[in-house]
Amino acid sequence: MVRTSRGWNTNNIETHRRSAHNKIHIATTRRYNYVTETTMIRHVEVMMTRQKHIHKALLFCIVLLSSCAPSPSQLLAPGGTQRPGEKGVFGAHVFHAHVQVNITASAEIQVYYPSTRDGAFDTKAAPAPVVLFLQGGAVSVSRYNWLLQHLASRGHVVLAPQHILNAAILQGELSTAARQAYTQWVQTPTHLLHQASSSEPMTILMGHSLGGITGAKLYLKQKKYQGLAVLGSYILPEEPLTSHTSRVQGSILLLTGARDGVIIPQKTRDTFSRLSASAYLGLVEGMTHYDWCDEVTDAEQTTDTQPQRPTKEVRIPQRSCWIHGSKRSSHHPNSKNWSVSNATI
Image 1 (cartoon, rainbow, N blue to C red):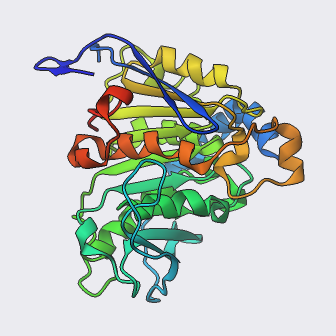
Image 2: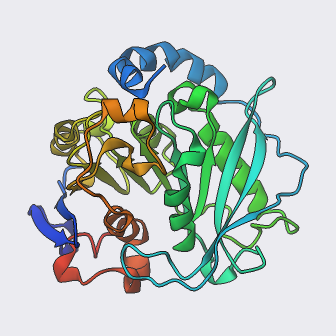
């Protein structure tokens, strides 16, 4: 891709990247004009409508931080590489925090961060980009451990709220609470993440499945994110993001598996064709809907298709490149093989 004084060129680019067992198809475009999870997805439009007024009433809630100091647990030791698909050079620790969402309700947030061997924040990662992750419907945040710890090893702080009933759509205001909590942490000299970043860090909103649908709604509404990553999901046709008159800052990544049996890839492709913002589409051959999770239950497998042998390595490179953009160009694969290597968000 080439960036000119007027912005990105309007040519569509399609490249192919192969691994031992999988092939990723990536297309990029820029238009210069500015219960079970399956059941929840089928009725998401109705649920969005019912929750609209509830969300408006709750967004004003005040965040109160827990007085308990975090006790981080080590997930990865430092010493990886920055090659695509492999864990990064940082260690990864996680701690659990509680935030007060409103007067009567509190919620837990799992916080993954780049760390040294003793569990301290690794200041070499500062200023660390922040990823706010929204879980899929009926899937606990703890089942995305491999994904979130990988992002931390690459130098990101990940905020992963545990939503009520494992459904981000029912508690959209929790994302605001998580962001406000993080702002207070970095402004508190005694907090573990005090040196992680500024009070207004680059923040990416990432969601899987139903979390991706919810994330798209929050992305345009809150206007405080520099990018949106939608994993194994799509954006509802009526959302302003898909309007050609929409003015969206940052870029959008749509990434899905070719064998996704819950949200078929065609829905993701249709979203891509409607987007008016800078957008990137990735298709991973052999990957199913629940391959984003650590493990798949029998009930989930019946709603999905059988994988051809997906690997974690093939799920990671395009996401890392997109998040880092040109800010950390040394992390990118060779640009002639990677269409998003010059992307900025």
